Image (cartoon, rainbow, N blue to C red; front, side, top):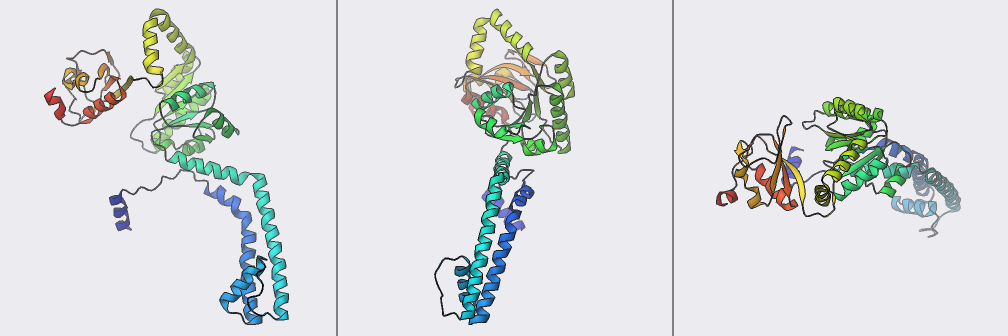
Length: 376
């Protein structure tokens, strides 16, 4: 067993991840009605085989074959002469075969008519697909906010799962192009396990009322503690007013978006600096824009820790500019100068092309100064 594990590791063999809830019990429950015709089929095949061997001295294989073609009424005829007693026995087998076939057809029709088996099979397939996701977002509750948020997530190729208790979630998912969805209450154990929160990057709770958002945040933080997750979930929620925003932040949300406040800020930006607002709209929100903006964390082991910004030379090697630094204590330094010291575990706000930012991140992750910077 140990050898097999080592061999798989050597080959890079990865087993497909399984969901926390597999629905195997429900799946097999729907298959339970098929046990009766299956048992009857095996029993008749056994009786028929023994009968032909006793009555007409058939060999074992000939008896099995004769029973099979007789039971299924395929009409191949007798493979060797059969006595009168054997023919009566054959007629009995044919009648029983027709009865078992009729029972099986009735059971299949009943299962198909109910539709439970198909629904369980679809949900089971969906859960296995969700289990393969990594660093996805669990988007809680479907509404107008969800439609707009998921559009942006899809445009930025960020995987997500929509969780909502509505019974018509399948139709909603098809209409609004949700690739993965779960029909359950988002704050319950069922919703958490089915959405595979253990491998998610974070939670986006967009409930219409603050009580549901509170329940989602509390459940996510509690689950985070139970599984001893080393990295905290990024939890984003919406709120209707300042009081609700304060509550959600105190309860553990990282970011809370208030629709009225956000709209006021955008309108104010448009009125005060319309050109700047248009510029931000152009490269932050427009699809296929050549510019991008991302944060890059400087670890304790990074060669860049405790170095000056000008040492990185990102503009020369990656065509990327550092436009801000967020310190470990949350303090933000906008437009830092070249002599600013980069502290360990701080985050650099980078602006540039997607390829340039990826290159800059590789440089930041290195433990020793890259060779390419020695010649710049």
